[in-house]
Each structure stands twice: as structure tokens, then as C-alpha cells.
Amino acid sequence: MNTSEAIIKRINEICREKGINVCDTCLKGGKSPSSLYDLIKGRTKCPKVSTVRSFCEGAGMTLSEFFDRDYFNEIED
Image (cartoon, rainbow, N blue to C red; front, side):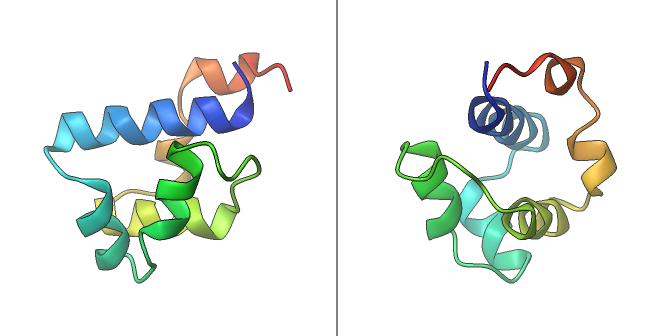
């Protein structure tokens, strides 16, 4: 799994767990959802931390909570 795949996996987990969607969460965090949709659809290969941070803000969590998964330590880019 590479970095982008791990981030997409985590976004999907959070959306499922919290019953939220990417669009509303990004808007709530102050960012256009197009950045995350580009990542999810494979058009962006290197997501910005600011994009992930905006998602986290909208989801009511910290970056530490977002990246607190073992698979982020097993990334093969």
C-alpha cells in the first residue's frame, strides 16, 4: 500500500464509522471536496497535509487521530 492508498483507506473508514460523507466533511473543514475526490479517483498521487487536515477538522478529529493506524507505518512508496 502506498501513501495515497492508505489515506484513502483511512478517509473511507472514518466516513463509515462516523456516518459522514467526504463532501460535507470537507466543506465543514473549510475546503472544497474536489481535492479529496481527485485523490480518491486517482487524479492526485501526492495529497497535501492541508487537505487531510481540513478533512480532519470537518470530521472533528486531529491529524494524530487520523494517522493513528499501523498501516501508515507499513507504507511502500
